[in-house]
Length: 193
Image 1 (cartoon, helix red, strand yellow):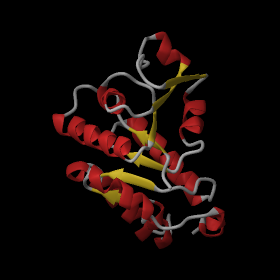
Image 2 (tube, one colour; image 1 turned 30 degrees about the vertical axis):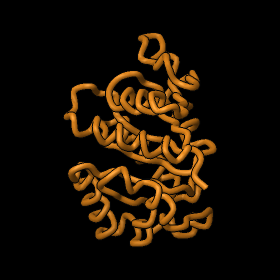
Image 3 (cartoon, helix red, strand yellow; image 1 turned 180 degrees about the horizontal axis):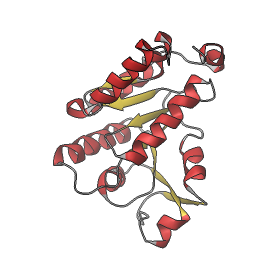
Image 4 (cartoon, helix red, strand yellow; image 1 turned 60 degrees about the vertical axis):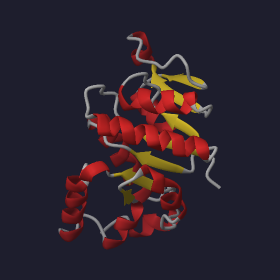
């Protein structure tokens, strides 16, 4: 059963409308399936769209935000719960606690940094839940090409491709999570190449 997911996404409000549309569609699918959304706690950009849509559709949104971001008033004021943490490191730890999957929407360096950390933890068997990229209009194609290069050049193993799944439409998120390859703590045995 999927009850809580963490969504990594951007705070930029200047991105193309298609990214806002995909975020809104994802939020609706999560609410329709009674899934709590955990995210970075911001009020603008894709973060704001995600939280606003969840709340407008009577869902649950939990934001996790560092204190310094609250000091500049980036926190969302109208969500189910806003958890203030000490720093970015603590935020990343909290974003992956007690969740059933991670969903990665298009984003910038912060989104990429969070994603690379959980992929690294998954490779080491310290994080075992599904990681699903919503690859809107091929946004993450060049990242997947880089992963292919890492595997081809033996920085990663072929088996490591099972650490993530890519879908093109948010409507496929539930099946993507359910059909994600099983991963467990034994992954540490294949972490090294």
